[in-house]
Amino acid sequence: MDCGRNEEGHYNEDNLVVSPGLRAGAHHTHAYVGNLSTDAMSTDASLDAAATSCRGGDRSTYYWPVLRRTDRPGSRPHEGSAGHGNTGAILPEASVRVEFRGSPVSKVVAMPRFLRGMTGDAVAYTAASDAEVRARWGCSGAPDRPTTRYPRCPEGDRVTRTLVFPSCWNGLDTAGEGHRSHLKFPAADGVCPRGTFPVPELHVSLSYEVPAGAPMALDSFPEQRHSPKTDHGMFVNAMTERQMAGVVACLNEGRDCRM
Image (tube, rainbow, N blue to C red):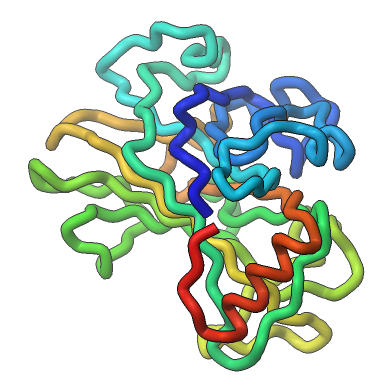
């Protein structure tokens, strides 16, 4: 999906997936592509009626915590997160790639409209285990060497983040307990857990122009201390049934499609 790279400056501290109806419920700033109306008060109906940054008309919303340069002060209202320890100038994304992939072991079925999904663990720094950690940081010159730490990229390389979302749906719910129970990750061999069905696997790939050695920090809850392990992302599928059918047909036929 060609959804731009947030040229519109769509930022807020809301989290429609985790804390709907609660303004500034994230306690850190999120950046968005796709649906241009998304905030804590969004509903299925409001998402369905809004404009989008996606050229093909996908009204889904895709979002993640911003990355900041801590050696530069913020200059815009959304660049301050007063009282939560998230300071510095927001680094704009140099590129954003929204991509859906098929299953390596079977055909995929359509996601239902307004399915909510998340990846990663926003409280990984204080969590008892790394079970939910999905952080994948890297450098553009070494795409096959992901890490859960902030990368030190050579001059000329971009800093990268890759958000891979769960792709095994329980066939019933658009949301679930803990925001995860309805949508699971497949096993390493691509097989979905019993009682779930493979849906298109969402990958959101981000890159940033960061001078070598410049300090950077991911927005986080205060007690998470900007740990790179806390990287996470959310989406709400607001494609029409026709748009989703096009995605499913493309993947199941093994084609490379631009939408």
